Image 1 (cartoon, rainbow, N blue to C red):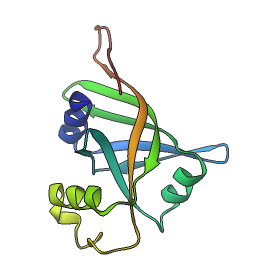
Image 2 (cartoon, rainbow, N blue to C red; image 1 turned 90 degrees about the vertical axis):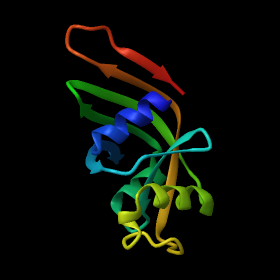
Image 3 (cartoon, rainbow, N blue to C red; image 1 turned 120 degrees about the horizontal axis):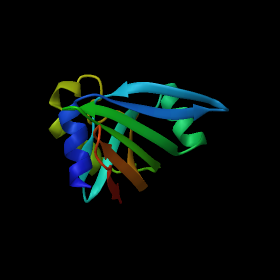
Image 4 (cartoon, rainbow, N blue to C red; image 1 turned 180 degrees about the vertical axis):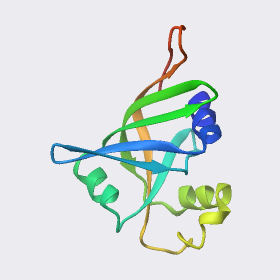
Length: 130
C-alpha cells in the first residue's frame, strides 16, 4: 500500500472515476493520505462526486508519474471521524481554508478491496492488493 501511496503522492494529481447512473465521471484529485494503514481521499459533501460515491462506492483511479502509470480499482468507505481529517489537513495545509477542520461539509473515504497495477512500457505490471 505504501508503494501506491508514494506513487500517487509523487504524481501530485490523479484522476478519480465514479459513475452517475450509467455515465462514467472523471475528475482530477490532489489529496491522498495514508492514515492508520488505509489510503484516504477527501471531498466536499456539496459536490456531485460525494453523491456518486454514496450511490455507488466503486471507484477507479489513474495517475501518471515518471514514465509509469497506475490503474487502481477499489471500493470506498466513508469515515466520519475527526482524526483522519486532521491528518489529511496536516499533510495538505494549503487546503485548510477550503476544508476547515470544523467544517461539516468535508468527507473522508478510505479505499478497501483495492487492486492496483503500476505499468511501464515493455515490462510486466507491478500488482498490489490491499
